[in-house]
Length: 318
Length: 295
Image (cartoon, rainbow over all chains, first blue to last red; front, side):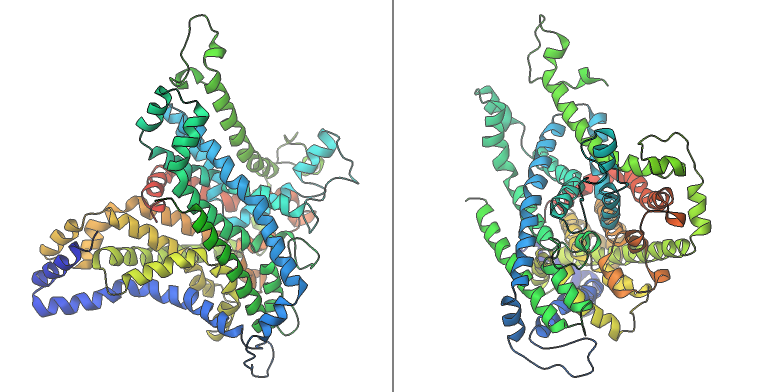
């Protein structure tokens, strides 16, 4: 598309700046403009991934004074024969299943409703309110919900115990801290957090649909549900695909929430592959980072594998 | 509420039906939206009220306090010794991160669209892949090593380096799609008039990508202001840490970390972002629609 413009641009640039000097200036500034971004991107994103990949084939321990040895696939064999590796992967998958439907369907519903608000001021007000959680930084969301879910003094249990009398102080639900309720509780929090942001995504998608399409369908006698299913849904498919794949990625790789709500108890449902990796790398023994690297790579490859399948399923037809 | 003005042409108004029957779909729609709005606002209201409750009210747990007490805000600044330090750390690290990331993203976005150096396609692919790979989790092992090698463990300023990359890829991609909206000819004519790439970008480009700038400002602010994992891992001293790690570790209870004090700290940390967003929301939405959805 822009290919056709590119050669012309070089000509103009060279002519404007005067032949050779112009070409040299262009060569230097090409890299000047990209250099700052590339330094950080390579130094703190590309290099770490390859470094971790390399470490995963060694018996590197950070706190050990002995040099690391190349151990080929030992770490991977060890990890894959550890039941905890499989349990921790299953826990991450379980959380993803709890979280993903709510974070796609609720915003879609909400977007369709907000899209039909014709009063501009109200529509803006709704969008601003919905987006407030999206501009609250992650950890502050977690801290807020840690208080909401607090066993003794949290408002949720206060409602259940004192206001509605459904529970007593002894048998009130223990939402966090590695109980069976912890993953659903975190999933609810995550849906709450992403609600507005995802709604805005869908509103943008709805705004891009030409108004004639649903109107024509309505004139032909289609019900609102048929309009949604046959007109709106296919038009929103690309946005839905991006959201499903991206959120699958975030859900499988959750770590901060598990550190804050679950800690390092291996029996806790929050002890997923990310925590398993972190535990090995920075907590246990002499920091077996070679082994931790293998755990991280297994987790990452497993979720990338599913993401590729998802991309294939949701790829727009034709 | 002026529901009457909002009802759409979906239902045909008939003289015989009551106002409620005619506006049924609008009423349902607004009720559902308001319910969700309430669910979003309630936890935030709870914290806000908690921060101005008297201590006995906080212990009792009722939503609306019997006695208001606004002294918690001054108390936390005067009596919690590390708080001003942690707050300063957060402001310093976040400001530096937002500034540097924005500069990197603008330059790279411009270069990828309007200079198109050799390998631009490869860079875009790498940026896209990094969005899907769990880089943040897996790279922490190697980032610790790098920071150790640079002597930046337990160093607040050292956090800025990895923080810049938290949202760098998405920022570059947003700026790239913003610059794709600016016609090539605009930069060409500026350069024919004798301006270099720098001046063409500064004078012609920046005003055109204003909405995108607002988006990456907010995205990077949110990322850096709330970052937890790196700060927890790379910094050990309480006084060198940023607010999120301190708040996440604080256990509500008695004394200096009583619930109202904790809530007051929370409100102090959360409010600047919400206020900034409320003012910038128009530009933010525009930028979000123009840039974020194209990548």
